[in-house]
Image (cartoon, rainbow, N blue to C red):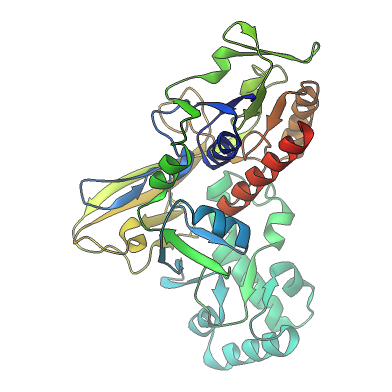
Length: 389
């Protein structure tokens, strides 16, 4: 039996806690918030709407392993996520598709563009802007420029707080046009929502008698790392077990190599009568002078039984400020060359401590979808089991 110390009760920490506890180990989970579930935490609010406190989380995956694993802890409701974007005053499907082309271009031009796309790339394909820009046909080039301006540019500037010159071209190049009339946001094999919400999943993951969960704990005040000696102290004593850390890696090392860059969000939650918008999410890829926010989410669309009234969350991206009243949650790493190099230096420090394993978006300084972090946690468990016999 090993002592497993896990920092963070989101999906990474909770899945690993469940797996280790079920394998006969004692697990302690330290969570700085007052609740489990990380950014997937949800609850029933005063409108009888299941509100996602940290923004909408949609379950979708192509991984049978992830789907089957989570199905041990929840029943599902069918759900196909659809997103509309305000483009030239019209609500059109995101990602941009043949429906959008018909709505935004004159009929003769739209028909010509659709014909070119189908003949060149095939019906049902997803064509990155980069590919369209490489195409010498003037109509396809015109389409690429339109999508870049109307769908990508202003949304991304608001999301990341960057000018067009600062936006990484690799991000731009991934923006697609869907050569289809499929209005779904995702095309994964498994698309559904947990029937009783995400928090119910976390409660079941963490209910094992060998798991102890402590909330409202700043784990970095209890943990001391010594990279030179390769050791860990916990609560002032030598710790001989395994430490799995899912929080900000710079915080773990007391900012010894400086503070990493993150982007945060602020949500203006409002209660409304009736139904507010036609789908769960409406994007606003408009200039900041028109709409300072990026999207509005109406949560009741993700419920099987929909209440009479509704709750919306207006999403404002903002700079991360750990000590601020707003923007004090690090949602996304900012992938500049400088920050990536800084992270790599922290990673080298972490390698000096054999008992330490980093898992998750903040600890690994990379973006994970929900299904990807669950799969990552399952893989890390197997790796650690093999390494320790």
